[in-house]
Length: 437
Image (cartoon, rainbow, N blue to C red; front, side, top):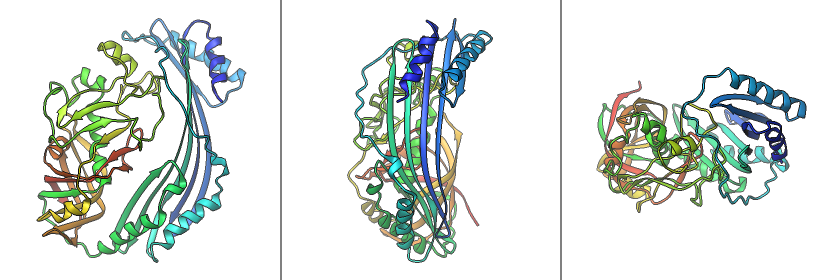
């Protein structure tokens, strides 16, 4: 659909190293608050970035129109920018084509009417039984296309549906998140029941003292740990610059042997494009295998610099971030959430974290707050709602103290590129450093 416009720019550049990257997105969003739909919006957006490289000097310009006059003008401006930009001494050239097998269903997002989304939201609200429901139901239809002067010419389309909602009962709340590839795959009634039950259970919470606790982390909380770990050190640029927790640790045990984390685009439940933002195919990468640090992820530049092959983890170039994992997956174990709770003498059940920030990337320490469902576990049963608590915790230490891993994978709402697939975890010696009052 878009490759003709990109090819026009490549041909017009006449032998200059040129790369065109386009992203087009149509979003349909239905928001609700106080159990009332207050907004339905539909947004169509498109951006084309044209990058040229002259003697290692990058010039980049972005436009949101595809007329030939616009493309001609943008290319000229990109060339002018390149002429006055300092050269990149590590410029690796542009990638050459590699095989990418693209077979996608032709989704018809434009056939989905606002009334359909409103009915789904109504199902959710009605199932909360008069509690206060707020959130958003979003449908996204995204196309990316990339072409360069070395012959890469690829286009792919991705369709997702997500529901994020909070149900409140007085001073208590319950949270749910679901992302699927099809609207009918989201069970709105079951999700409403989960959030409502937590909201009712969480009334009149008690305060616990800060300290080290055994925790049962539901998947949304685990997603925060895994996503931030992925951000802090699996990229080749971070490693090469000495900013990764993996420096000096490749081949060594860094977590419990129960932990295996992959960048796993081929997983049957993974959501993402089949190639990266440089046009290279996504590859499965074993990052941690049974507790042992194994590999990094690479883009084209750092693969060439470090004598490796790209793993298909390139962001739009040029950038200061380098490659990062896109489809993080913590492989499942054999326990159910119920078994984790039943095996806990005294601990805390955490639904999710929020307002999470990095404290020390080398030690993988993050801090944040519990939210929307925190409960005391005593003698294998959930007994008392707990006021939200601040945690300050090394992720690797938490993964080293893991006792049980859930057998089901869920998509986490905490992610930086594509959804993270994670199970629930039971972790010992998790540090809470403060409480809310």
